[in-house]
Image (cartoon, rainbow, N blue to C red; front, side, top):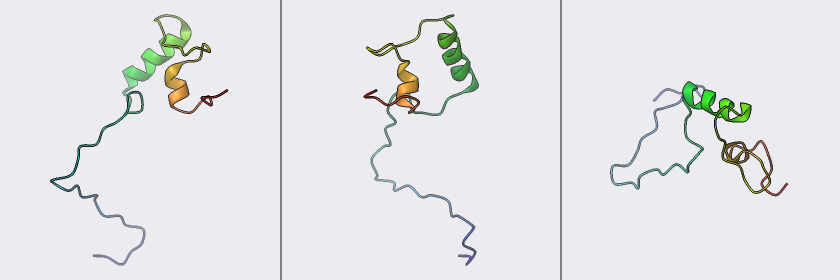
Amino acid sequence: MSSDPNKTSAAQVAEDGAPIIVPDGVGIWTFGDHLRHLAGHNGTIPLALDEYGRCLICVRRGFFTPNA
């Protein structure tokens, strides 16, 4: 292994490890997902809102505090 601290090694996954579960709404977005989300904010398509009228995806991503 190199002694260079700036290099990183590839992550290794145990073969018998548990599967990684990603909560809904926090996974990697495609460009189309982003455009669909913007269309929801524009009013073109329905947008999922919480009880305070905020976008659920934006709340999950941290643009609003959940208790605000």
